[in-house]
Image (cartoon, rainbow, N blue to C red; front, top):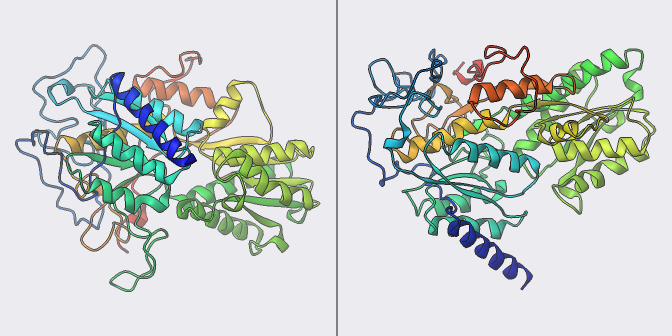
Length: 478
Protein backbone atom coordinates (compact mmCIF):
# COMPACT_ATOMS: atom_id res chain seq x y z
CA UNK A 1 0.00 0.00 0.00
CA UNK A 2 2.83 2.40 0.85
CA UNK A 3 4.44 1.91 -2.58
CA UNK A 4 1.10 2.36 -4.28
CA UNK A 5 0.65 5.70 -2.52
CA UNK A 6 4.13 6.80 -3.59
CA UNK A 7 3.39 5.89 -7.20
CA UNK A 8 0.06 7.69 -7.09
CA UNK A 9 1.73 10.82 -5.76
CA UNK A 10 4.35 10.61 -8.52
CA UNK A 11 1.62 10.37 -11.15
CA UNK A 12 -0.12 13.41 -9.70
CA UNK A 13 3.18 15.29 -9.71
CA UNK A 14 3.69 14.38 -13.36
CA UNK A 15 0.25 15.67 -14.31
CA UNK A 16 1.01 18.90 -12.44
CA UNK A 17 4.25 19.33 -14.35
CA UNK A 18 2.42 18.82 -17.64
CA UNK A 19 -0.21 21.36 -16.65
CA UNK A 20 2.53 23.92 -16.06
CA UNK A 21 3.72 23.62 -19.67
CA UNK A 22 5.86 20.49 -19.38
CA UNK A 23 5.46 16.79 -19.45
CA UNK A 24 7.86 13.95 -19.06
CA UNK A 25 9.80 12.49 -21.89
CA UNK A 26 10.04 9.18 -23.61
CA UNK A 27 12.92 7.35 -25.11
CA UNK A 28 13.05 5.20 -28.21
CA UNK A 29 14.31 1.74 -28.75
CA UNK A 30 18.08 1.72 -28.84
CA UNK A 31 17.88 0.55 -32.41
CA UNK A 32 14.67 2.34 -33.32
CA UNK A 33 14.55 4.53 -36.42
CA UNK A 34 14.45 8.31 -36.02
CA UNK A 35 11.18 9.75 -34.88
CA UNK A 36 8.54 9.59 -37.56
CA UNK A 37 6.96 12.81 -36.34
CA UNK A 38 9.92 14.82 -37.61
CA UNK A 39 10.57 15.34 -41.31
CA UNK A 40 13.69 13.43 -42.41
CA UNK A 41 16.59 15.43 -43.84
CA UNK A 42 16.41 15.80 -47.59
CA UNK A 43 19.90 14.47 -48.21
CA UNK A 44 21.47 12.98 -45.11
CA UNK A 45 25.09 12.11 -45.65
CA UNK A 46 26.10 8.48 -45.18
CA UNK A 47 28.46 7.58 -42.34
CA UNK A 48 32.18 8.00 -43.09
CA UNK A 49 33.76 5.22 -45.10
CA UNK A 50 35.70 4.07 -42.06
CA UNK A 51 34.72 0.59 -40.91
CA UNK A 52 32.08 0.91 -38.15
CA UNK A 53 34.31 -0.95 -35.74
CA UNK A 54 37.50 0.94 -36.57
CA UNK A 55 37.30 4.54 -35.38
CA UNK A 56 38.47 7.29 -37.64
CA UNK A 57 40.65 10.17 -36.57
CA UNK A 58 38.87 12.74 -34.41
CA UNK A 59 36.87 15.26 -36.44
CA UNK A 60 38.94 18.30 -37.32
CA UNK A 61 36.03 20.72 -37.22
CA UNK A 62 34.80 21.81 -33.82
CA UNK A 63 31.16 22.63 -33.21
CA UNK A 64 30.36 26.01 -34.66
CA UNK A 65 30.62 28.98 -32.33
CA UNK A 66 29.32 32.16 -33.90
CA UNK A 67 31.84 34.98 -34.32
CA UNK A 68 31.01 38.06 -32.28
CA UNK A 69 28.21 39.89 -33.99
CA UNK A 70 27.33 36.98 -36.30
CA UNK A 71 23.79 35.74 -36.51
CA UNK A 72 21.86 32.63 -37.46
CA UNK A 73 22.12 31.45 -41.07
CA UNK A 74 18.56 30.50 -42.11
CA UNK A 75 19.87 28.53 -45.09
CA UNK A 76 22.19 26.27 -43.13
CA UNK A 77 20.86 22.71 -43.64
CA UNK A 78 22.19 21.04 -40.47
CA UNK A 79 24.07 22.00 -37.30
CA UNK A 80 27.85 21.83 -37.82
CA UNK A 81 27.33 20.74 -41.43
CA UNK A 82 30.22 19.76 -43.66
CA UNK A 83 31.46 22.31 -46.20
CA UNK A 84 29.30 20.68 -48.88
CA UNK A 85 26.20 20.99 -46.69
CA UNK A 86 26.03 17.31 -45.73
CA UNK A 87 25.65 15.99 -42.19
CA UNK A 88 28.79 15.51 -40.10
CA UNK A 89 27.82 12.59 -37.91
CA UNK A 90 30.66 13.25 -35.46
CA UNK A 91 29.51 16.81 -34.69
CA UNK A 92 25.76 16.71 -35.41
CA UNK A 93 25.03 16.33 -31.68
CA UNK A 94 26.86 19.53 -30.68
CA UNK A 95 25.20 22.92 -30.54
CA UNK A 96 25.75 25.27 -33.49
CA UNK A 97 25.18 28.95 -32.74
CA UNK A 98 24.71 29.73 -36.44
CA UNK A 99 21.98 27.13 -37.10
CA UNK A 100 18.28 28.04 -36.99
CA UNK A 101 16.72 25.51 -34.59
CA UNK A 102 13.32 27.19 -34.75
CA UNK A 103 12.59 25.65 -38.16
CA UNK A 104 12.28 22.20 -36.56
CA UNK A 105 9.48 20.81 -34.37
CA UNK A 106 9.52 21.92 -30.73
CA UNK A 107 10.04 18.75 -28.71
CA UNK A 108 9.32 18.11 -25.03
CA UNK A 109 12.45 16.92 -23.24
CA UNK A 110 12.66 15.37 -19.75
CA UNK A 111 15.28 13.90 -17.45
CA UNK A 112 14.34 10.91 -15.28
CA UNK A 113 16.85 9.75 -12.68
CA UNK A 114 16.92 7.04 -10.06
CA UNK A 115 17.92 9.54 -7.36
CA UNK A 116 17.74 13.27 -6.68
CA UNK A 117 21.09 14.15 -5.10
CA UNK A 118 22.91 17.39 -6.08
CA UNK A 119 24.72 15.72 -9.00
CA UNK A 120 21.45 14.69 -10.63
CA UNK A 121 19.93 18.10 -9.90
CA UNK A 122 22.88 19.88 -11.50
CA UNK A 123 22.51 17.62 -14.53
CA UNK A 124 18.83 18.47 -14.76
CA UNK A 125 19.65 22.18 -14.53
CA UNK A 126 22.11 21.76 -17.40
CA UNK A 127 19.57 20.02 -19.64
CA UNK A 128 16.98 22.65 -18.85
CA UNK A 129 19.48 25.37 -19.74
CA UNK A 130 20.06 23.82 -23.19
CA UNK A 131 16.33 23.67 -24.00
CA UNK A 132 15.93 27.25 -25.28
CA UNK A 133 19.07 26.97 -27.42
CA UNK A 134 17.69 23.89 -29.18
CA UNK A 135 14.16 25.38 -29.31
CA UNK A 136 12.78 22.64 -27.06
CA UNK A 137 10.32 22.62 -24.16
CA UNK A 138 11.58 21.47 -20.77
CA UNK A 139 9.19 18.89 -19.35
CA UNK A 140 10.99 18.57 -16.03
CA UNK A 141 13.27 16.50 -13.83
CA UNK A 142 11.69 13.46 -12.19
CA UNK A 143 13.32 11.27 -9.55
CA UNK A 144 12.28 7.74 -8.64
CA UNK A 145 13.82 8.07 -5.16
CA UNK A 146 15.68 4.75 -5.56
CA UNK A 147 12.44 2.88 -6.39
CA UNK A 148 12.86 0.88 -9.62
CA UNK A 149 9.14 0.19 -10.00
CA UNK A 150 8.41 3.88 -9.64
CA UNK A 151 11.06 4.68 -12.26
CA UNK A 152 9.29 2.60 -14.90
CA UNK A 153 5.95 4.14 -13.92
CA UNK A 154 7.36 7.65 -14.30
CA UNK A 155 8.79 6.78 -17.70
CA UNK A 156 5.55 5.34 -19.05
CA UNK A 157 3.50 8.23 -17.76
CA UNK A 158 5.94 10.71 -19.26
CA UNK A 159 5.49 9.06 -22.64
CA UNK A 160 1.72 9.23 -22.20
CA UNK A 161 2.05 12.98 -21.52
CA UNK A 162 3.71 13.54 -24.91
CA UNK A 163 7.37 13.80 -24.01
CA UNK A 164 9.48 12.81 -27.01
CA UNK A 165 13.09 13.23 -25.89
CA UNK A 166 14.57 11.61 -22.81
CA UNK A 167 17.74 11.55 -20.79
CA UNK A 168 17.39 8.42 -18.68
CA UNK A 169 19.42 7.40 -15.62
CA UNK A 170 17.76 4.31 -14.14
CA UNK A 171 19.30 1.74 -11.87
CA UNK A 172 21.56 -0.31 -14.16
CA UNK A 173 19.62 -3.47 -13.44
CA UNK A 174 16.43 -2.20 -15.10
CA UNK A 175 17.88 -1.03 -18.42
CA UNK A 176 16.31 -4.08 -20.16
CA UNK A 177 12.90 -3.09 -18.78
CA UNK A 178 13.47 0.49 -19.92
CA UNK A 179 14.29 -0.75 -23.42
CA UNK A 180 11.14 -2.86 -23.41
CA UNK A 181 9.07 0.29 -22.83
CA UNK A 182 10.99 2.35 -25.35
CA UNK A 183 10.71 -0.27 -28.08
CA UNK A 184 6.97 0.33 -27.99
CA UNK A 185 7.45 4.05 -28.77
CA UNK A 186 9.73 4.49 -31.82
CA UNK A 187 8.72 8.14 -32.13
CA UNK A 188 10.70 8.90 -28.98
CA UNK A 189 14.47 9.17 -28.49
CA UNK A 190 16.79 8.72 -25.54
CA UNK A 191 20.32 8.60 -24.25
CA UNK A 192 21.62 7.91 -20.74
CA UNK A 193 24.17 9.85 -18.72
CA UNK A 194 25.54 8.31 -15.55
CA UNK A 195 26.47 4.86 -16.82
CA UNK A 196 26.81 2.97 -20.11
CA UNK A 197 23.44 1.38 -20.94
CA UNK A 198 24.05 -2.38 -21.03
CA UNK A 199 21.91 -5.50 -21.20
CA UNK A 200 23.35 -7.34 -18.19
CA UNK A 201 24.58 -10.29 -20.27
CA UNK A 202 27.51 -12.35 -19.00
CA UNK A 203 29.88 -14.89 -20.50
CA UNK A 204 31.49 -14.65 -23.94
CA UNK A 205 30.49 -13.12 -27.26
CA UNK A 206 30.05 -15.07 -30.51
CA UNK A 207 33.82 -15.01 -31.08
CA UNK A 208 34.54 -16.44 -27.64
CA UNK A 209 35.78 -13.16 -26.14
CA UNK A 210 34.60 -12.15 -22.63
CA UNK A 211 31.73 -9.68 -22.66
CA UNK A 212 32.34 -6.24 -21.14
CA UNK A 213 31.37 -5.81 -17.49
CA UNK A 214 27.61 -5.25 -17.47
CA UNK A 215 27.06 -6.88 -20.85
CA UNK A 216 26.51 -5.49 -24.33
CA UNK A 217 25.78 -1.85 -25.03
CA UNK A 218 22.12 -1.24 -25.90
CA UNK A 219 22.58 2.40 -26.92
CA UNK A 220 25.35 4.98 -27.26
CA UNK A 221 27.18 6.26 -24.21
CA UNK A 222 28.53 9.74 -23.59
CA UNK A 223 30.91 9.71 -20.68
CA UNK A 224 34.11 8.23 -19.41
CA UNK A 225 36.33 5.17 -19.12
CA UNK A 226 35.51 4.04 -15.59
CA UNK A 227 38.64 1.92 -15.06
CA UNK A 228 40.70 4.98 -15.94
CA UNK A 229 38.50 7.12 -13.68
CA UNK A 230 39.43 4.93 -10.73
CA UNK A 231 43.09 4.89 -11.74
CA UNK A 232 43.30 8.68 -12.08
CA UNK A 233 41.85 9.14 -8.60
CA UNK A 234 44.60 7.02 -7.05
CA UNK A 235 47.29 8.77 -9.10
CA UNK A 236 46.01 12.05 -7.62
CA UNK A 237 46.16 10.58 -4.13
CA UNK A 238 49.75 9.49 -4.76
CA UNK A 239 50.59 13.00 -5.94
CA UNK A 240 49.13 14.45 -2.74
CA UNK A 241 50.96 11.89 -0.63
CA UNK A 242 54.29 12.73 -2.27
CA UNK A 243 53.75 16.44 -1.64
CA UNK A 244 52.42 16.19 1.93
CA UNK A 245 53.48 12.83 3.39
CA UNK A 246 56.77 12.25 1.60
CA UNK A 247 58.45 10.84 4.72
CA UNK A 248 55.55 8.55 5.63
CA UNK A 249 55.91 4.91 4.57
CA UNK A 250 53.12 3.22 2.63
CA UNK A 251 53.04 0.76 5.52
CA UNK A 252 51.65 3.56 7.69
CA UNK A 253 48.95 4.70 5.27
CA UNK A 254 45.54 3.18 4.75
CA UNK A 255 44.15 3.33 1.21
CA UNK A 256 40.37 3.11 0.98
CA UNK A 257 38.37 2.65 -2.20
CA UNK A 258 34.70 3.47 -1.86
CA UNK A 259 32.75 0.93 -3.90
CA UNK A 260 29.30 -0.12 -5.00
CA UNK A 261 29.68 -3.69 -6.18
CA UNK A 262 26.22 -4.10 -7.70
CA UNK A 263 26.98 -1.36 -10.26
CA UNK A 264 29.38 -2.66 -12.94
CA UNK A 265 30.56 0.83 -14.02
CA UNK A 266 31.35 1.84 -10.45
CA UNK A 267 33.04 -1.49 -9.83
CA UNK A 268 35.33 -0.73 -12.77
CA UNK A 269 36.57 2.34 -10.89
CA UNK A 270 37.53 0.12 -7.95
CA UNK A 271 39.45 -2.13 -10.37
CA UNK A 272 41.36 0.89 -11.68
CA UNK A 273 42.19 1.95 -8.14
CA UNK A 274 43.48 -1.51 -7.28
CA UNK A 275 45.68 -1.59 -10.36
CA UNK A 276 47.38 1.71 -9.54
CA UNK A 277 47.87 0.76 -5.88
CA UNK A 278 49.74 -2.35 -7.00
CA UNK A 279 51.69 -0.38 -9.59
CA UNK A 280 52.81 2.25 -7.08
CA UNK A 281 53.44 0.11 -3.98
CA UNK A 282 54.43 -3.17 -5.59
CA UNK A 283 51.90 -4.94 -3.35
CA UNK A 284 48.64 -6.72 -4.02
CA UNK A 285 45.57 -4.60 -3.25
CA UNK A 286 44.55 -6.49 -0.10
CA UNK A 287 43.61 -5.45 3.41
CA UNK A 288 46.77 -7.08 4.70
CA UNK A 289 48.70 -4.59 2.56
CA UNK A 290 46.63 -1.58 3.61
CA UNK A 291 44.11 -1.49 0.74
CA UNK A 292 40.44 -1.59 1.75
CA UNK A 293 37.15 -1.48 -0.13
CA UNK A 294 34.04 0.02 1.50
CA UNK A 295 31.13 -1.55 -0.39
CA UNK A 296 28.24 0.87 0.04
CA UNK A 297 25.85 -1.49 -1.76
CA UNK A 298 25.82 -3.58 1.44
CA UNK A 299 25.08 -0.60 3.70
CA UNK A 300 21.57 -0.32 5.24
CA UNK A 301 21.10 3.20 3.84
CA UNK A 302 22.21 2.24 0.34
CA UNK A 303 23.58 4.68 -2.24
CA UNK A 304 23.58 7.76 -0.01
CA UNK A 305 26.01 9.80 2.04
CA UNK A 306 24.77 7.97 5.13
CA UNK A 307 25.35 4.66 3.38
CA UNK A 308 28.94 5.73 2.77
CA UNK A 309 29.34 6.56 6.45
CA UNK A 310 28.01 3.12 7.36
CA UNK A 311 30.41 1.40 4.96
CA UNK A 312 33.56 3.44 5.58
CA UNK A 313 33.14 4.09 9.30
CA UNK A 314 33.98 0.60 10.60
CA UNK A 315 37.04 0.36 8.34
CA UNK A 316 38.54 3.71 9.36
CA UNK A 317 37.72 3.43 13.06
CA UNK A 318 38.89 -0.17 13.59
CA UNK A 319 42.27 0.24 11.90
CA UNK A 320 45.17 2.12 13.47
CA UNK A 321 46.26 4.16 10.45
CA UNK A 322 46.74 7.88 11.13
CA UNK A 323 46.73 8.72 7.43
CA UNK A 324 44.14 7.71 4.86
CA UNK A 325 44.01 8.13 1.09
CA UNK A 326 40.45 7.67 -0.13
CA UNK A 327 39.22 7.04 -3.68
CA UNK A 328 35.76 8.51 -3.14
CA UNK A 329 34.10 7.02 -6.24
CA UNK A 330 31.22 9.56 -6.28
CA UNK A 331 30.53 12.76 -4.33
CA UNK A 332 28.19 11.39 -1.67
CA UNK A 333 30.60 8.58 -0.83
CA UNK A 334 33.58 10.94 -0.72
CA UNK A 335 31.72 13.27 1.63
CA UNK A 336 30.76 10.35 3.84
CA UNK A 337 34.37 9.19 4.13
CA UNK A 338 35.59 12.74 4.78
CA UNK A 339 33.07 13.14 7.60
CA UNK A 340 34.41 10.00 9.32
CA UNK A 341 37.99 11.27 8.98
CA UNK A 342 36.94 14.58 10.51
CA UNK A 343 35.21 12.86 13.42
CA UNK A 344 38.39 10.85 14.07
CA UNK A 345 40.63 13.93 13.94
CA UNK A 346 42.42 12.67 10.82
CA UNK A 347 41.56 15.43 8.36
CA UNK A 348 44.95 17.16 8.14
CA UNK A 349 46.87 13.98 7.35
CA UNK A 350 44.38 12.46 4.93
CA UNK A 351 43.08 13.11 1.44
CA UNK A 352 39.82 12.24 -0.28
CA UNK A 353 39.24 12.65 -4.02
CA UNK A 354 36.36 11.80 -6.30
CA UNK A 355 35.27 11.50 -9.89
CA UNK A 356 32.47 14.02 -10.19
CA UNK A 357 32.63 17.03 -7.92
CA UNK A 358 29.19 18.67 -7.95
CA UNK A 359 28.76 18.26 -4.20
CA UNK A 360 32.32 19.38 -3.57
CA UNK A 361 31.77 22.58 -5.54
CA UNK A 362 28.74 23.41 -3.41
CA UNK A 363 30.76 22.59 -0.31
CA UNK A 364 33.51 24.99 -1.41
CA UNK A 365 31.01 27.69 -2.32
CA UNK A 366 29.72 27.43 1.25
CA UNK A 367 33.27 27.97 2.53
CA UNK A 368 33.77 24.43 3.84
CA UNK A 369 37.11 22.65 3.44
CA UNK A 370 38.04 19.26 4.87
CA UNK A 371 39.85 16.10 3.74
CA UNK A 372 37.74 16.06 0.56
CA UNK A 373 40.28 18.03 -1.50
CA UNK A 374 40.01 17.28 -5.24
CA UNK A 375 37.53 16.27 -7.91
CA UNK A 376 38.11 15.04 -11.46
CA UNK A 377 35.33 17.02 -13.07
CA UNK A 378 33.46 17.77 -16.26
CA UNK A 379 31.03 20.67 -16.03
CA UNK A 380 27.44 19.56 -16.31
CA UNK A 381 26.84 22.03 -19.13
CA UNK A 382 29.57 20.37 -21.23
CA UNK A 383 28.43 16.90 -20.21
CA UNK A 384 24.85 17.72 -21.18
CA UNK A 385 25.56 19.30 -24.58
CA UNK A 386 26.23 16.18 -26.72
CA UNK A 387 23.65 14.10 -24.83
CA UNK A 388 20.92 16.68 -25.39
CA UNK A 389 22.11 17.27 -28.94
CA UNK A 390 22.26 13.56 -29.69
CA UNK A 391 18.66 13.05 -28.62
CA UNK A 392 17.70 16.07 -30.71
CA UNK A 393 19.52 14.62 -33.74
CA UNK A 394 17.60 11.33 -33.36
CA UNK A 395 14.26 13.12 -33.14
CA UNK A 396 14.98 15.08 -36.33
CA UNK A 397 16.09 12.04 -38.29
CA UNK A 398 19.63 13.35 -38.76
CA UNK A 399 21.24 10.31 -37.13
CA UNK A 400 20.30 7.00 -35.55
CA UNK A 401 21.76 5.28 -32.48
CA UNK A 402 23.70 3.09 -34.93
CA UNK A 403 25.22 5.96 -36.92
CA UNK A 404 26.01 8.85 -34.58
CA UNK A 405 29.62 9.59 -33.54
CA UNK A 406 31.23 6.97 -35.83
CA UNK A 407 34.77 7.94 -34.83
CA UNK A 408 33.94 6.78 -31.31
CA UNK A 409 32.85 3.20 -32.05
CA UNK A 410 35.13 0.90 -30.02
CA UNK A 411 36.19 -2.15 -31.97
CA UNK A 412 35.49 -4.66 -29.16
CA UNK A 413 32.64 -2.94 -27.29
CA UNK A 414 29.89 -1.63 -29.58
CA UNK A 415 26.89 -3.74 -28.62
CA UNK A 416 25.86 -7.19 -29.76
CA UNK A 417 26.51 -8.65 -33.19
CA UNK A 418 25.67 -6.14 -35.90
CA UNK A 419 25.40 -3.12 -33.57
CA UNK A 420 27.62 -0.04 -33.90
CA UNK A 421 26.94 1.94 -30.74
CA UNK A 422 29.51 4.62 -29.96
CA UNK A 423 31.14 5.77 -26.73
CA UNK A 424 31.85 9.49 -26.90
CA UNK A 425 34.41 10.45 -24.28
CA UNK A 426 34.36 13.77 -22.44
CA UNK A 427 37.34 15.81 -21.23
CA UNK A 428 37.96 16.11 -17.50
CA UNK A 429 39.84 18.61 -15.32
CA UNK A 430 41.14 18.29 -11.78
CA UNK A 431 39.53 20.89 -9.54
CA UNK A 432 40.88 22.15 -6.24
CA UNK A 433 39.64 24.85 -3.89
CA UNK A 434 42.21 27.29 -5.27
CA UNK A 435 41.27 27.03 -8.96
CA UNK A 436 37.77 25.62 -9.38
CA UNK A 437 36.22 29.00 -10.12
CA UNK A 438 38.46 29.53 -13.15
CA UNK A 439 37.31 26.34 -14.86
CA UNK A 440 33.65 26.89 -14.07
CA UNK A 441 33.80 30.47 -15.34
CA UNK A 442 35.32 29.16 -18.57
CA UNK A 443 32.44 26.72 -19.02
CA UNK A 444 30.00 29.62 -18.91
CA UNK A 445 32.08 31.42 -21.53
CA UNK A 446 32.10 28.37 -23.84
CA UNK A 447 28.43 27.46 -23.54
CA UNK A 448 27.05 31.00 -23.40
CA UNK A 449 25.22 30.13 -20.19
CA UNK A 450 25.23 31.95 -16.85
CA UNK A 451 25.63 29.48 -14.01
CA UNK A 452 28.64 31.23 -12.44
CA UNK A 453 28.10 34.95 -12.96
CA UNK A 454 29.41 35.57 -9.42
CA UNK A 455 32.84 34.10 -10.23
CA UNK A 456 35.66 36.43 -11.36
CA UNK A 457 36.44 36.46 -15.10
CA UNK A 458 39.96 37.92 -14.96
CA UNK A 459 42.37 35.76 -16.92
CA UNK A 460 39.66 33.45 -18.25
CA UNK A 461 39.89 33.02 -22.03
CA UNK A 462 38.13 30.69 -24.45
CA UNK A 463 41.31 28.74 -25.23
CA UNK A 464 42.14 28.06 -21.57
CA UNK A 465 40.53 24.59 -21.67
CA UNK A 466 39.17 22.30 -24.37
CA UNK A 467 35.63 20.88 -24.61
CA UNK A 468 36.87 17.89 -26.60
CA UNK A 469 38.72 14.68 -25.83
CA UNK A 470 40.86 12.63 -28.19
CA UNK A 471 39.72 9.21 -29.42
CA UNK A 472 41.70 6.70 -27.29
CA UNK A 473 44.18 4.50 -29.09
CA UNK A 474 42.49 1.34 -27.82
CA UNK A 475 39.32 2.17 -29.78
CA UNK A 476 41.07 0.94 -32.93
CA UNK A 477 41.51 -2.80 -33.47
CA UNK A 478 45.11 -3.86 -32.72
